[in-house]
Image 1 (cartoon, helix red, strand yellow):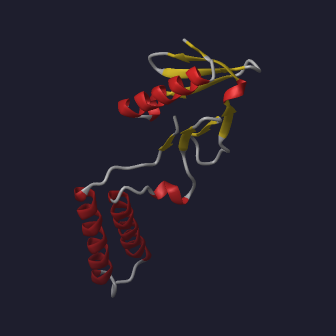
Image 2 (cartoon, rainbow, N blue to C red; image 1 turned 90 degrees about the horizontal axis):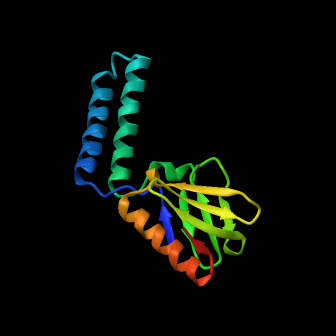
Length: 150
């Protein structure tokens, strides 16, 4: 079973779209009103409101602004598990042949490796449905690879 989860994914929201449009319009009006009484503070306030409006519009369509800085994801396939929970860090790649057993608990999943390392996947990063998808993918692949499940 193959699974790919984008951890920056946002929900599509009409209200967030309208909030973004209204913030952007407000920033344009704010800059026009304060154009003749030019002050750097007013300029930066208008600029910040415009950026906030654009951000809300982009995220209302299901895309995250954080994707511009890097991806955060979890990928499980037949050959490996690839974890990238932080934008700055490199992805952690775990090959199925290096796994001894997998332990499911109420708050996390622990993957025990042959070199006596332990990798934790905390449930706090995911919704309940996503946790169930991850568990299913890990269970099916572990059964195919004869890995012990606890």
